[in-house]
Image 1 (cartoon, rainbow, N blue to C red):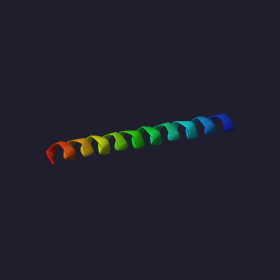
Image 2: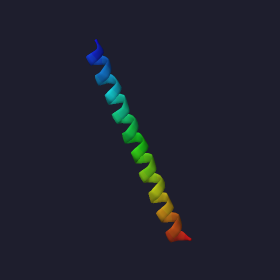
Image 3: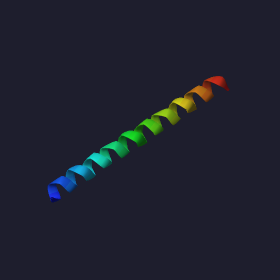
Image 4: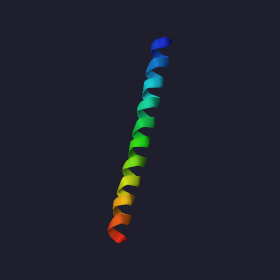
Length: 38
């Protein structure tokens, strides 16, 4: 039971970090683009 819960939690954290990473990458790309435009 605990093992299953731990796996679920680690998977959730992995997904969260992936989403957060993609958002930050997107923001940095937007920053670069706006810098080029300006």
